[in-house]
Length: 320
Image (spheres, rainbow, N blue to C red):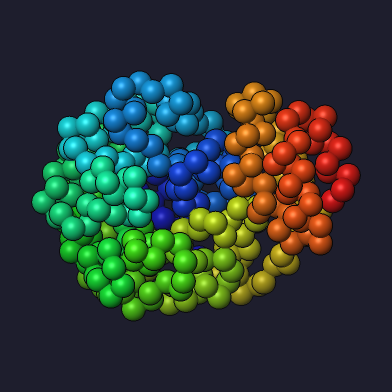
């Protein structure tokens, strides 16, 4: 199994938790780290909100020792604001700064940020240079293969990133227009890896040994980044590490394991946000824990409509 390092930061492996807006908060990152993730990312943070000292955004920057190394992802379309935001993130304790060049959400694209930037290499260069110069830690980027199917923007953007001092790039192997649906384009991903002078990490649709192996067979692929495939399934990092180190296929998590992860996630969420907000935030991920249960729809409905206290939750667990 390959190990990765950026500067003086060494990862336990090359299997990484992807940044997911509104999802990869501190409670979830701690679970992924305990499940064997070599690196974890915060959700996408607005550079403008950080510079405005937005309280909600600042809350998402809190990190703990047990999740290190941790990368914080920022997005924006103005170089000077991105640079200021990077300083704020660095001062918060993040080990790595990541620049989002791949978010396909319309609201982000309308602001000229995320995947929209793939069409403007000059602005990408300005942003990346400004961010790299503003901090003393490694800077990475996350991109898409392009805006539309068969559009290869990644190859040139990776060259731009390397010239700006970027240390690693994660490529979501689907075009922005495809969102998170459909199969990743391994051909375009391979093209983005070819000739890259910085580590290229594969992202998009990784859910098991096969989907990970498909990417790792691509020449010059340096690692795997897992998003939705890790939710409620945190041992996927250890399972993949074992598989690629020794060829062993470890068992999938049992229902009991998933329940224990859920209990711990609720505990972390309530500790971090408080009881009321903790359960509101959990609604974004709860369905991943119960999707395979025979009475999943009923349990999900109860959780979304009636669970507001730990006492309520402890009663719901009895239905599992």
